Image (cartoon, rainbow, N blue to C red; front, side, top):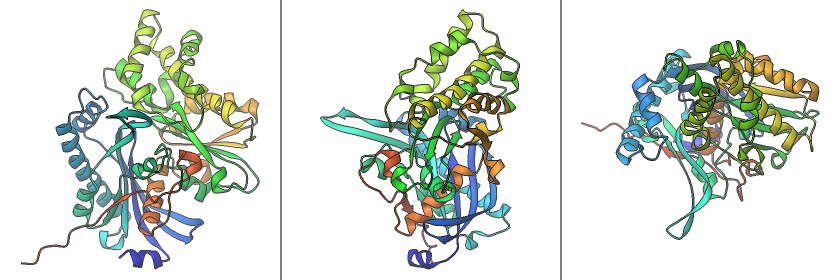
Length: 403
C-alpha cells in the first residue's frame, strides 16, 4: 500500500487535531498533489466535533499529575480513539466521499503533558511528551491506515517535539520577497518566522505564551462554566486593561527564555489562572477589566516576541493569525494597534483564502502523507533537533476474519 501512495500523484488525507483549549476534534479532509517541495493542498471538507461535556471534564483531570492516574489515562486514550474515528468518518461523509475513496488519516491526538526540558530520572536525562487518542482504534474503526503520536520522534532526535506546524507552513506559505509571521492562537500562542526566500534551516518558530488558555479559563470561572470562551472578545471589549496586573504578568520568566522554547498547560494552566483570579478579587477588578487584561496579555506577548526574537534580524510585512484567536475581534484589534507602529499588517487566515480552524488539522494531514511515503516531516531549526526525522507511528486496520 505504501508503494502505491509513494507513486500516487493525488492523495486524500484526513488530518485531525484537538488542542490545549480542549474544544473538540478539528478534522480536515484534504487533497494533496503537486511537487514534494511545494505541494498543492485543496480543502475538501472541515468539521469540528465538540467533546461531550463529561469527556472534556475528564480530559482536564489528566492535565494534573495528581489526578492523571494510569487507569484514567489508559481509558481516555481508547475513548478518544473512538471519538477521533467518528470525527474522521463524519468529515469524509461531509465531503460526499466514502472511506474507500480516502487514502489515510493523520491524527495528532490530545496532548495531556509535554516536558521538553530534560530532568534526571533514575540517573538518566528524560524528556517526554504524552498524546492520547489511540491510533489503532482509529484505524480499526475507519478501515484506514492511521498515523499518530508524531512528537516523540523529534524528541528522540534531541528536539522539543514542538512546534510542528511550521513544517507545513514552510511548504504552503513561504514568499520570495517578504518576511512573514504566522501566529497561531490556540490554547497556547506560537509564532513561525518565515524570512524572505527562506531555506528550511532558516525558518524558526516558538511558543509566544498563552493564547486563549487563560482567557478561556477566566471567562469559564466568571460565568460558572456557562461560557467556555469570550465569543468575539465581547466581554473584553467592555473593559479596560489594568496596567498593574498586566505589568505583573509580564514578569513571567518564560517570555525572556532563549530559543527554541515551548510551553503549555504545565505553566499557564489551572494554578497560573488561579493566581490571576485571586489577584483580581483582592484588588476589586471588574470582570470586564479582568477579561480585557488577560486578552491584552496575549496581544502583548506576541508583540514582545516579535520585538525580542525577530525584529533584530528581520522586518516582517504581515502577521497572519490562525486558530481560534483569529475570531476574537477584540484580540485582533489589540494586535493591530500594537503592530501598526512596527509596520506590520495584521491579517487572518481567511484574508488569505484559508480556514483558521482547519490550519493545524491540515498540517497533520501533510505530515501523515510524508510519513507513509518515507519523507522527513520536521524542521530541526524550529524544534532544536539534531537531525530531521520521520514523525508518526503507523497503525494498519486488521483485515476482517474469514468465516
